[in-house]
Image (cartoon, rainbow, N blue to C red):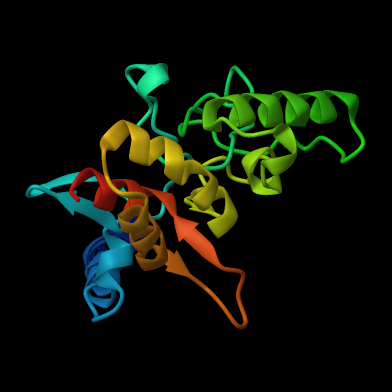
Length: 198
């Protein structure tokens, strides 16, 4: 009986110590590290603020859907493999690539459909559409596009929003990162937020 009581008390002590260390101490330590300068923005999901409210994240490229496709004011991200149609917006709750091989007939058909749809949307010939406009990213929510794809969209966005093309090119430059060692990439959520409040 005494042994059972001693083991019970020891077990409760271990449970109490583990609860304090792992249930309180460890989460507080992780939270404290996330508050260090340079980490806080990413720990909070890199929210994009506009007018005092969160309008998105610079880390998640959810392709915006225009209310009127004929008057589309947005820069668009790369296509998503989870989208129901070739250039439609994917569901960020179910991200991922298609896992289709480069020579797969289904993938080649989707790429051609995307090329034709983007060319029609932007008013250019299909050969002018950059590769990243027609190939889905691995995650489906990649926020970055090539400067060429961003530049292709400038005339349409300028026409719909009334923002001068030169101003849109400046916004693209401000939303571009990379260079010498990394591929240059335009952050679409940041670009759309800047264009919306230009």
